[in-house]
Length: 147
Image (cartoon, rainbow, N blue to C red):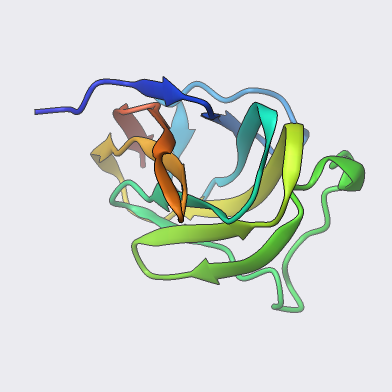
């Protein structure tokens, strides 16, 4: 069963974008495509120690931004990046540990569609590490990658 969306003092949303920054339909992705993921986190209150837990759908891999072949996306607004304490890129997820912030911030990362098929897109989740009742969960669904 898919857990229902939750917004309790915090809101996190995921948007899929192409390399030009335009929204991507999750059913029109082709194998080999680079997809930019925008995670938008916002709160009217000052929050500290927020963790964003972004599970990847099957068939996708996180692009390593440290590789020489990684592309720079000039349309990204560097001023809108969440004040991050640490980012962990794992095989199945991305974890972003954000510092103190209030208002709206965006965090971007890139994934590559490596396998064709229809995959479950887990919800993106965010919460305060030391105040777990402040949390958000949204965006569960499916994505399709065509050959």
